[in-house]
Length: 196
Length: 184
Image (cartoon, rainbow over all chains, first blue to last red):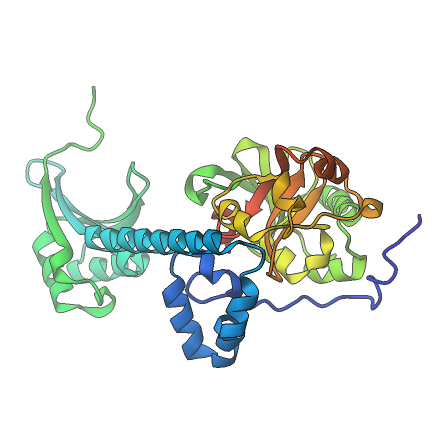
């Protein structure tokens, strides 16, 4: 087999190239300008590694990057990326505001309830550990389940909704970081899996 | 291919692969990519079993210790993941697109011929011409790392001659859902 790649195969094993990925947008550093968080990427890089920052964003580097695009195409490109970044930020903010922790009290029988909490993982709470914590605190069963929408929630036996709100307010243990304004309490009368 | 891909809904199953099948995959990959066995040994040691993750649309992703290495659609050529391509950029032949086309590629568009035949683009010269249906690494003008991986829809000579329509179909690009999938 005529192999024309003799020279590239030189040393037996070629080591991988180490790529620096941006902490903010996970792209290789040179592609941050196309991501949706360019200004944050620049800040992060400036803090971490000023030399690399200069390599990419100093005056000569920017000039060289203009490449073969005409001036108006280049400015249009910049405007578009700025608009995209603004849109992505707005979406992220809206998402943050919408992140409610929903505490539902579902009726199981006439006088028995279950409490379902969902939305905690949006705040970085480890659901399994939180479920264990609740189970210990309230001496009942608690588990992590997937509801029909595909979202995970913690289901605690008994009506502990008020106590959960208190625990979140007091920022007990690993419930830290959940702001109390984001809690919503609902009562549900639905019967789970009722017959048709 | 990975424009909309969410692990929770699009993965149908994970299985380990029989060693006979593993051997055939290893041989196929070695013949399709410009890689030599020792380097490939670094990526995928002989002793390690890979996992096959089956996804919708007959897409199979092969992972090692949870990290996706390469994938294929039906029984077509194997494509490395972009992460893998960044580490070993020589495994696929390269085409380059000009600066204006980058943002369209990053939105998932396919690459049109003019993007590669214009001043900022690059196609392999006639003696290294690629046929249609070959996996290629898509590089961007002024950047050292690949932006995406595609498959040629036309032979590179035809792209230069006809210069109209889709030249390279984008299979995966920087920032798509496969890129976001670090662990499977």
